[in-house]
Image (cartoon, rainbow, N blue to C red):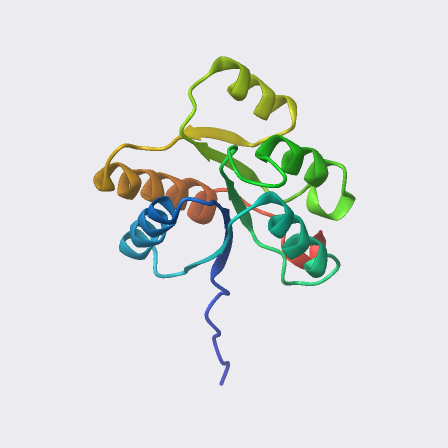
Length: 149
């Protein structure tokens, strides 16, 4: 008899310093996806440390949600660091920020962000956003496994 194992949950690294937004993102994903785990770091330096410690292992996140306005190392610097590190470049990065400024949007894509989303202004908006991210990035898109990175 074969044993069927459940797939590993999708791990998302949330880089966000606003506790209210952290709570909204976590609650939204809790409502729409039972197979998604969210780890949170509150600044760019902490994010780089988190990623560096996991390089070469199967513990890298499957997806990164990044606010641009974070302390110590800002979102643009973090995007540049990720794109300058060979085994991190395959992690999809979704910028999730409050800015809808064209320079921020262009700057994010110039630094190889995979998507740019503005933060919703309501709980329901965060739930809809989490549903869309889950449907596309978790359920539909084929992402490389950590061992392939």
